[in-house]
Amino acid sequence: MDTSVFSKHIESADIVITDSFWKEKLELVRKEVIPYQYEALHDRIEGADKSYSVENFIKAGKIAEKIRNGEKIRVYPTDKWCYDEGNSHPDSFHGWVFQDSDVYKWLEAVGFSLINYPDKDLENKADAIIDIVCDAQLENGYLDTLFIINDRDAVFTNLKDWHELYCFGHLAEAAVAYYKATGKTKLLDTACRFADLICDTFGENKIKGYPGHEIAEMALVKLYEITNNERYLDTARFFIDERGKKPYYYDTILGKETVYDNYHYNQAHIQPKYQSEAVGHAVRGVYLYSGMADIAKYCKDDELYNACLKLCDNIINKKMYITGGIGATVDGEAFSFDYDLPNDLAYSETCASIGLIFFLRRMLEISPDAVFGDTVERALYNTVLSGMAVDGKSFFYVNPLEVLPEASRKDSRKRHIKPVRQKWFGCACCPPNLARLISSVGEYAFAENEDTVFVHQYIGSLLKTKNAEIEIVSDYLDSGEVTLKITPQKEFTLALRIPLWCKEYCFTETFEEKNGYAYFKIKQSCEIKASYSLYVRMIKCSNKVRSNLDKVAITRGPFVYCAEEVDNGKELQMLKISKMPDFDICDDILYANAFREKESKKLYGEWAESEYVPVRIKLIPYYKWANRGENEMSVYIRI
Image (cartoon, rainbow, N blue to C red; front, side):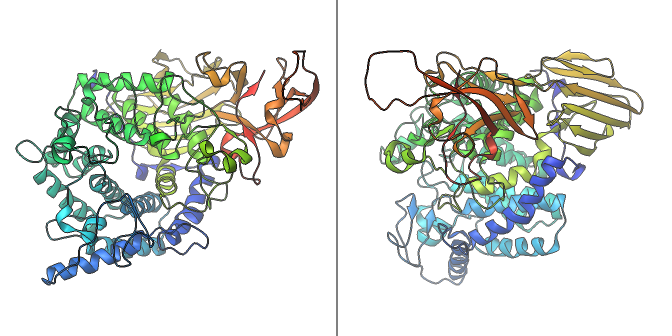
């Protein structure tokens, strides 16, 4: 591991995004998504699933006060993943076991939004929720509303299934973001008190447990970065080192009375340093791998870093959809086996692609490689943005590559595939996850170390770094042109990612190329222009991907395109794109020569050449599908 290239992402406070594409998304999150989700967390969205999140914190706050007053508290069961009015007492906890995390992710999104756009009214709303959250914390620092409300004696008794450490992770990440935005320490102090309890509880000669759903690992590292408290880093490393050791901790404590007995599901089948294939629940996986990358970097652990490299290779080259989606199967929301990437059964959870971006940002900060940067770009502009409607008021949990609405209604294997975005979800991890990522998108675009500034994503921005002030004027998505105006503080190196989709590129200054990055020596104020040739590509899969034999996906720059019924008629499987497609582009719409196979209603018959009618098809960016009503959609088209 070459520590000389280690970098750290540039903080949102040092980035002013001027990019028209991303300013629109940031404004959408600020004006629509954050207020909408505020109402959802308070159960005020008509026709949407209830959240219960704020209600649970209010209940827990009342319990915490009763405990302080020495009052006797009623006990309720803690034996389910989801509690509702039909299966639990009205005064008990309601929602999923991880319901607290929705509030924390909203607060994190607010924190980043306040950095971008100060808003006193929004800050006041967040402060009011923070007061409700902090009032629920017990004297010893514990904070999880399920166990505070239902059964205090059940705390930390089922780490595998009940998500206390997962909820802590989102609390810590929210606390750090809100502190950076406002300088207020109330939530950060609350998170640190819970973290201190965790450090006192877990470790050598203590409880040798670890999170069932990972995120505490990278969250503890974030707390370490802001506080310099070595205990947080040590506990994060303990969780990673202890995971997968035999005999399994969960078996020694719980026997087999758990929700999932297969330890591949939560990546606890073997120790992380020996893992080379991405398995199990996809979100849990990439959250773990993010923590592994953090520890590999801070502890200079080559063995853990090499495991991260192997996991990256397995995901990117054998388990990732062309849209940057991961987690092919609904069974366990999980990675499937290598090259198993069905289009019409895809799970491809929004949160999984967000987690993949978390992981790859950390890999870029260890060692910049265009493969990592390109994959972040692929996930960001396709699956992640697909997770939210263009008006910011409805969402996808699952992001398929082929949709037949009738099948979603009538085929139980495809009921997870929604042909229209939903107002909200009872299990609502994805919408607030989207809001926090988009609000902090600049931190995934730029990084620096003592002598180098890295541009991983070409988002128009004003950057203030230790090395220089840089203005990035980006027309990357439309023409492939980028201009960087540089005012150095000292001599430094500028590193620009060369997109792997680009065969022809040029720069106005001399450079050295390494691992897909162009490196420029900057000694004085200057302007560098980068030009990346944008052209339409027809991309085929490995022939080991059975779903896509003799099919292609259409891409241009970072965008994957798809066909919708509203533009091309029903029965999209009848379309075949021409080998001479004569592509036209108007704004972000592609047109291409194609053929429509004539329908054959006879179920079986003697083979004969099919008949085709020439047509001109229309393709839109994948992230924009399902914004014009319910209809068929397909990314892959026969050729």
